[in-house]
Structure formats: C-alpha cells, structure tokens
Image (tube, rainbow, N blue to C red; front, side, top):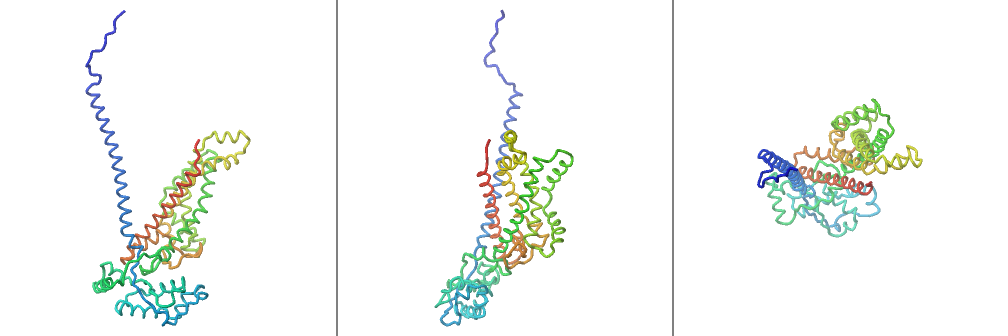
Length: 421
C-alpha cells in the first residue's frame, strides 16, 4: 500500500496568470457598478435640473401683478341685486350699469392718472366677478386688487420700458403694486394678455379628450388582447396581426395625426379641433399599447387556473371572464394608464387635426372647439411676452402634476387588485 504524501506547505494554489485574470474580472465588475451608479446619478441630476428650472420659472406663472383700486359704491349708480347678477349675463348687466367707467375713474383717484392708464383693460371684470360672488362687495367703500397691464407687469419685473420701470418702482414704494397668487390661473382660459390667461380651458379639453380615448381604446384593446391570447388559432394570419400590432406601437405619433386628419375629419368635417376627434385619434395610438400590455398580463396567469376551472365544468368563455380576466386586470390597468399618460402628453397628432386654435372659452361638450394642455404649452412657448414664459412653465407644472396623478392611480390599482400565487 502506497503512502499519500501531504502537499507541501506554502505552495501557491493559484498561478500568477489566474490572479491577473481574477483581478481583471473584479476590476471589470467595479467599473460596471460605477457606470450604473453614474447613470443613475446623471438621470437624477437631469430630473432635478428640469424640475428645479420649471419650478423656478413656474412660480411666477401662478402669480399676477395687481394694483389696488378703491371704489366708493355709495357714490356710484351700481345696483347689486343678487337675483339679477347671479343669473347668466351678470357681467353684462354690470357693464351696462357703467362699471368699466367707474373702475377707470376709481383707478385714477387711487393710483394717479399716469398709473391708471396702465391697468388691464379687463380690470373691471375682476371687480364684477367679486361682486357677483358676493353682492355685499358692492356696498360702501371697497378696495379691489385688479390686474396691471402686461407692460406694467413686465416693468415691475425690472424689464421692459425704463419709464414704466420708474413708475412701477414708485408704486412699489407706496405699496400700490404687488405680485399676488392668481387663483384665476386655474379657472380661466386662453387670452392674448398674459395677465388674463388661464389653464382651465386646456385642462378641461384634455380631460374630455382623455375620456373619449379611454372609452374607445380600453374595451377594444382588452377584447383584442383576450381574443389573440385565448381564442385565436395559431397560424400565419395571426402572426401577421401580432407583428402588425407590435409595429403599430412604435409608429411615430404624427402618423396617427395624419390618419385622423384623413379619416375622421373626412367623416366628421364639422368637428374639427373637437375633443371627440382628438380622442379618436389618440385612441388609435393608445390601442396597440393596451393590446400588448394586456396580452402580457393574460399570459402571466398560470395555466393551472385555467385547467382547474375547466376541470370543474366551466366553459372556455367562463374561464376567461370569471378567472383569467380578473387576475390579469392589474397588469392591464397599469398598461392602460401608462398608455393614457403617454397620450396625455402628445402634441403632434392633435396639431394635425387642428387643436391648436385660439380657444378663449372652455369646451361645453365633446363636440365644441377645444385645445389641450400640451398644445396650450406649445402655443404659449411661441409668444415673446415675458408673462407667457412664466405661464408656460406654470402650465408644464400642472401637466406634470396631472401625469403624476395618473401614474399614482396606476400604482394604486395595481396594488389593490394584485394577486399572488
């Protein structure tokens, strides 16, 4: 029997070449981790820069330069009957009673003749709206903060005409001009004067357009996904349809705009720039995304659930609608809302169907002329007035908050209906 000799002590178990390769592999892993961390830091830095820039510029968009005007209604002929003013046409009633002239005279007495020339031409509407909201405001002596003209507002920001800057500085020293929070920014629509411009018209247009998009795209997309995944035969034609849907999801959005222009506006020529046409166009763009996300969610349902349902006597249709669809719903809803969020931010297809018109009133229904938030931002960004620069950033903040809200809803629905097995 031979004896097994023990290995000599202090004998190197790794060769020098092995150590070099090991060191090189570790260095490569460290570089990879560093690159990944750098990518995350860069992304966060860009996001912080974007949000910081939007917030810095957008804070001014939620403010309006205003001047105080004191009106003594005991010496004016204005009659503030609430039964009359709170009916439609209340503003016109006050206009016929001479409120614009009363406001102009009061502005001259409160601010001086030179400054009174630089209040907004629609300053009387601010007074009228406060009187309509509360008719007690038309009794005795009242002070109203009314919007300054765009030129005076620009001068108050140390820009524009030097003469107006001197006037704004003088008013500031006397406490007769200030940047106040503009609650009306969320209640008014587009206007040529940045002091009067608001976001409500575009926001309502976006909501109506998204509602049409959801009503059309969601049921059709889900049913298409169910059929393709559960019932469609596996043949060449099905493969062609699947490949076509996958390719449609990557088609540039402006192509869908051209399709909407060529098809929908040919069929409904009187509904140009209406939410119903915009919603139909965006539904075409969103539908492939819903089909793809829906098929992935349906595919993720374990086959044992289908087999179990079939084993207790359920029909194939019952298996799909009673078992598969409820379990796949969280994934379908998440994909749908992400697709809707993408549609909300689209501008190009809506420009093609004419939703870039100047719309000064919120749309009354789905067939009324309207614009949407991204298009409103695009239009304001084209203006040279400094006031519109701030309004543009403020509108972007509103759009981002809207997108965050939609993504928050998607996360909530996914967590609420999520099933584990």
